[in-house]
Image (cartoon, rainbow, N blue to C red; front, side, top):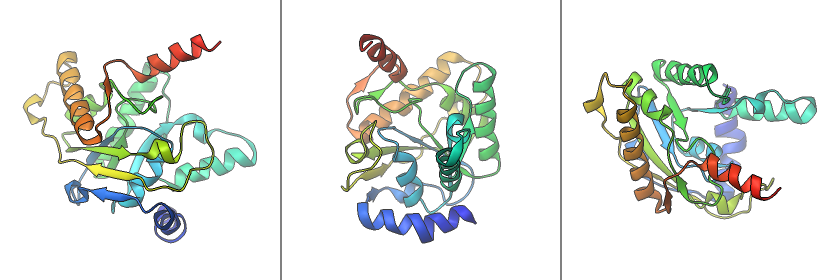
Length: 229
């Protein structure tokens, strides 16, 4: 109820009226059943605008730090992420990664829409980076459709490090569902997982027209952080 109220009465109408996002391919999202929306990740506001334009409720997996802050700011951040349908996950790897996978599978098993960023983090420079194979495993284990989504110009509206977005139009291009049924039962094969992930990233590149870089975005961020010390 809170999610619906914020999306349709409070936050949604305000943001849609100010930013006037344009959308292509909304009809490609199934109207019922579990489905994965796999998106590029340019800005913090990707997790806001995509759920606003999709008629169905979208749950995103968000880092757990957003839900554990203290004081008034921590409380407000937690309430905001809950209101936008995001679920806390631990991204430290190992068992935490397995728990994140299970959280996503639970959402899909309940026939809901799950939003995922295959790159694993925001792009540091608006380029598209190598995808993590967790999304492929989730697709093959759940058997649900996966729909590629390209966010357009959101990094220009709210660059990394800024607190208040600039008023400008952003876009969302939604591709047709991808079919990976030929890999049924092969979710334990790392070569299959990489193949599925790379095919998904190729489609995201085609929709977004971003320059593709075949390394992980986290590696680029770590290298830049080291050089800046």
